[in-house]
Length: 440
Image (cartoon, rainbow, N blue to C red):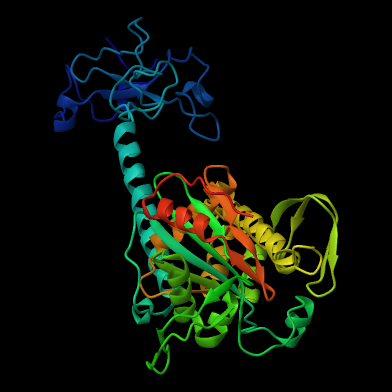
């Protein structure tokens, strides 16, 4: 069998290898398929000029080679099975054309990618989120704790009554102008008096049988007991002197105020919290205002109040005017304490809402404004402070009781407490019982 195209002579073949040849067969030919020009031989006379084999360029394009059996001379392209070595398609491993597991035209065979381990991904995502939350919470706690102004030392208070069940907070709003500019004093209608006096006082009892918020009118008639000077440490004996409750603070500050409240009520005060004018307004503005429903319209040129009846949102300036107004009411001090209770409960409710707690752009400014302006006792923790706000939120939501200290009359312009009702009230608070006493 002549494997050479017709029209080629023996002399043109050059050295011959394979069966019947006299030339030495190269080593590669024994193990590799030989390459020959694919396709049928060109008809006689249809090759290049002179009947020679098909011309090389530029007379014709050479055909692509195909493999034949290296030892037998059999062409796999011509055996009728349509086998293609893959040489023309770039597949050099001898797979069928268009082969592979992907079907015709598929690329080289690749191992399948393993399925993602979703359980492992979810686990590590959860661990990462928990770690971020824990680290952020711890950092926030220490940041907030460092901003608390623990300036009141209740250990200086002498002859204190025994502690009862639950926790009692004395919450004080002072008329301090600390840190306020002249423009701010004018805008907030605070005046420019030096020093500071108590503008509002409340006792908040936090217990298992409902929380109770009790306002102490600033004009309450009280007896100043013996006390130790806050700065001097000197002991001042009792003289039976009666005065208004807010005068105790003006005389010797927070420790004398606590001593006076404890002496006249018999109730142990566990924590002290004070906030000034500027701090109060800043907290309200930081939380985005507080929504209130005002029953009757009123004006007061002294506080700057000018309110219409109905639901409305108060900013810091308006809120301060609302809680300070007293000249617009007949029972000036008692109505003001009711307004203060109402607003502080609404403020606590706004601070404790998810829209504030879960929004860092709202939470941190609110915490910063509040913590910078609050003055507390040395034993106050952030947990105690959070408990106080949560209890005030509960009172506003109907889970507790808010009331004024029971009043029986007045003397010399001072409001006299109803001693029998006050005793019953204090006993119920000490034993953490449901409050049955009502106030004015």
